[in-house]
Length: 325
Ligand SMILES: NC(=O)c1ccc[n+]([C@@H]2O[C@H](COP(=O)([O-])OP(=O)(O)OC[C@H]3O[C@@H](n4cnc5c(N)ncnc54)[C@H](O)[C@@H]3O)[C@@H](O)[C@H]2O)c1
Image (cartoon, rainbow, N blue to C red; front, side, top):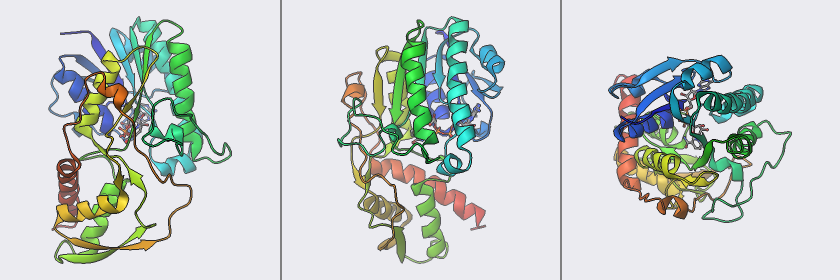
């Protein structure tokens, strides 16, 4: 068995996928999570992992977790747009203090590699789509608490490159783009649309409905299934060049209206979409250039229809069961 890996936030949606990919590649894995959003059932059935409960703001807890680990994957963060507005102080505290603690713990443990989870949100509205990793980063309004998330991630990238790498760790950053899959939480377009379709179709008893949507659905995103993302993250983190940044995602741009129609198809409901007002501040297009990750040998294996059938099926079962159907 190879050297031990620590995954902070390892009970989260992406973290658990990454843990599974690392174990699949033969690594011993330890997880540190405060279980604020992490769920232990996501790690059930993964052999030989060690799970610790702790807060990344607690330097001693992180030092203890990192002991004996050669690679530190730092994913723990406060996610969810609601929190960016309601608790920007906590978002920045967990983000920046947690990253400083994780780098210090990696150095104390004599680890060789530090891998940092950033986000596509560091671009805000990118000038170039598909967006390459050298696109400029942007905090459009520092007074808006929304940017506690993207701003904290930009700070984390600076700490990774100019502190972790400078002090002797190999340091790699990955920026995930719209990762989806079963059990990804509920504050996301896929679970939200599945739930509204179930409600408006009277528990899937009707075969056609009108669905009001935000805007006209022309905004685009590129959706990447968790199985692809976990493998892409593992590849970037293990084989990526120190000091480099890698996009993790799929480079197929999909309009939100098209995504919603495909969700309807998965549920067997024909949808007539009714455009409505769009929340201000959204990004009209997002799609990563993934050539850098592809050069490491990454190739997506899960197309959108296959991945959506998986995710929509999980949420359909969840919502139907919670309605006693
Ligand atoms: N899901 C996406 O599409 C996406 C996109 C871009 C970036 N990311 C980044 O990838 C990483 C994982 O995201 P995710 O979607 O799995 O989110 P998630 O919320 O499911 O996972 C985050 C994990 O961190 C844990 N955590 C939060 N605060 C903590 C603390 N103080 N101490 C210890 N653990 C703490 C949570 O309990 C959770 O298990 C995050 O850094 C996120 O910002 C995700």
